[in-house]
Image 1 (cartoon, rainbow, N blue to C red):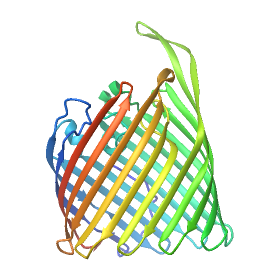
Image 2 (cartoon, rainbow, N blue to C red; image 1 turned 120 degrees about the vertical axis):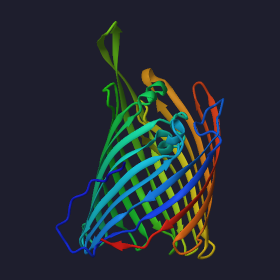
Image 3 (cartoon, one colour; image 1 turned 45 degrees about the vertical axis):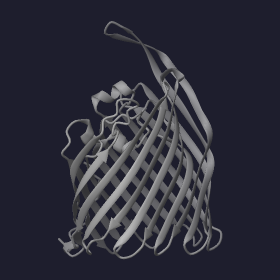
Image 4 (cartoon, one colour; image 1 turned 90 degrees about the vertical axis):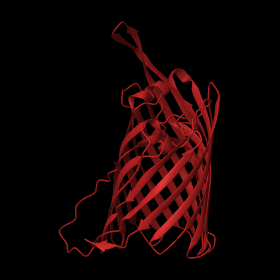
Length: 387
């Protein structure tokens, strides 16, 4: 489950507390849920959906705790392609000059469900914990500073070791300074430092980055955000000589990952049509020995035809280069496209149909895999209930 740690507020009247449940039933079809290169086996299953957000909202203080899950009837690996249990929460406190947010989570799901195509087609149980905090302070009418930090820890099922997945801890921290040039233009300076460490102590990556950013409100509905800079990562691996049951430490093997990083996002927010497009190059944790350099392009769109019908489209392309032990490099390419139609049968009932296509190329040795999926679900949104 996913748990976001939060600070308790003093006792207050019950009115600010509320719950807005959603429950549903879904059926799934995957032509190749394991993204196997050969010998693909299709599967169908049925799953129950539950989402129970509990909120607390009063002047300056907002709290959310959100248990959610999907439980299917398929045992073994296939359940990991669709099942998950999360408990998310967040706490935000705001004043006239500053905002502080604390979040955290504990989750159980699948490496394939979480990581998309960047797990070599491997789907194993994934248990994770994460905490993050950020603080924003207005210095003047035009300038502000933000500080953020995060910690996460991920553990995989034992069978993941056969595919090179390792349990890891990831810590990040950094400041952001913003200056409002005009009503529509903002400049930013963004710095960051991170440490990625395997829990067995064999490998780690220490990285730091510096970026300059620009935010432009093009029109009332169009917005452009762009960041560009440089990132450097030092990867180290402890080398041992094994003799029978004894391990002798021989030294540390070190490599560097240096290069430009960037992210560009263009968004449109209209009454009926919303659009988002982004491109980025970043260093990210993926569950392998070191940080991975990921190039990604994504597109999302939503159109509301009427009060009863709306449609969504999302597509993500990723290419990753991940250093492995002894300097080897593992390459992956991944494309995930999903199209969905939602019919709001009544004010509280929604029927959704989603079609998806995933393709993945990874190696060496080179493996090509693809999977088609169809998801039909019906859900009921209950009215807000004060606690």
